[in-house]
Length: 278
Figure 1: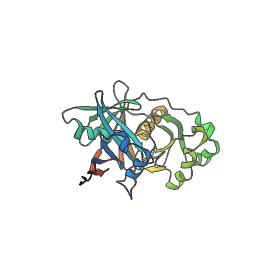
Figure 2 (figure 1 turned 135 degrees about the horizontal axis):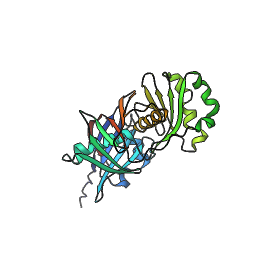
Figure 3 (figure 1 turned 45 degrees about the vertical axis):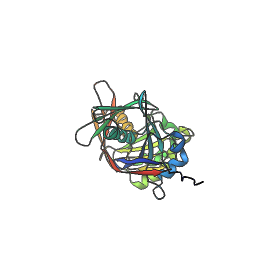
Figure 4 (figure 1 turned 90 degrees about the horizontal axis):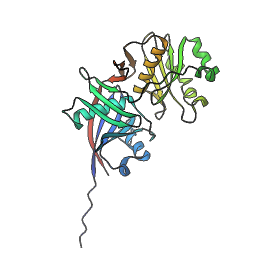
């Protein structure tokens, strides 16, 4: 008897990026197939896989769209701002072209995307903003001494769904300045076993950058970091209706609407698509 050769299943994927923060996106794949840390690490590997900062799995059920988000190391954070903008862009292009807004469920609640001018996409943040905690200064102690000498203007711990230690300076710190303390701050005992992201912002130039958990390095852009900076500037009395923040990968925007809701803006783009063979 001749046996029929089993045909490998092919699954389509999309590669999206927003301000240099990139993601592998997959639609409606059973969780048992791809949605585990080992597979995600392979997909995100820049030599042996597709290459990305994270993976986004989109599913649709009777209640609507939902996502499962993974960092490149296989961890599962509650939220990702740039990933959210890419998700809104994907839903606009592939989910429902007729809609004027696109919603999906995250671990923080319902996120909603809306198109802005040109390539701009806005995402309403799915949780209320928390008050900045400036008492953390006491616990960080001697780590801050060198930073104070270089014009540290503000420091606070801010939870945007993802924890951020936000440092605001009058000028810009150099890469060397940041590299000497990024890992110390990210793993400091004050933030528990999970640690924190470390986000830097210059009042003079508007330059911003985040050292991210799960990536374990400075990324080209961080949406949750942008929201944390906006909250820090509000706390400092320097808040504007809309913040324009220059990250290494491009500009991110944060604004409050009339209802006090926070929105994150940027320009996500589809880079390419392909097929995975299982």
